Length: 137
Image (tube, rainbow, N blue to C red):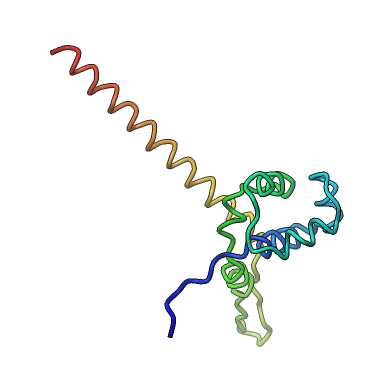
């Protein structure tokens, strides 16, 4: 049994995000100034160069990191989490997913980005304070 992890298939991630955004290959191709065939080839590629990935991410309205770390299993897990409860009179009540899972992924990315920026700012303040103490001695 192999313990090697399977690398992310960036092209497949692009395809799934594009589909979740209800965008056709032609529209994405137009947005980044390439042909539909080029988009088809990119979506079939396991890796995509960073410059092209950034252009595609901008066209899809997501950060490039979201494309790199996209998890189809997580999206389908969220979508599949529906609950049906039978109420007192015997009819079923359904509680379905009422949000776009991609939006939740973007929210998590933005929260992480804000946390990183706060931590970075705290480290800069700490360094400035330590430099001040050294100058005073």
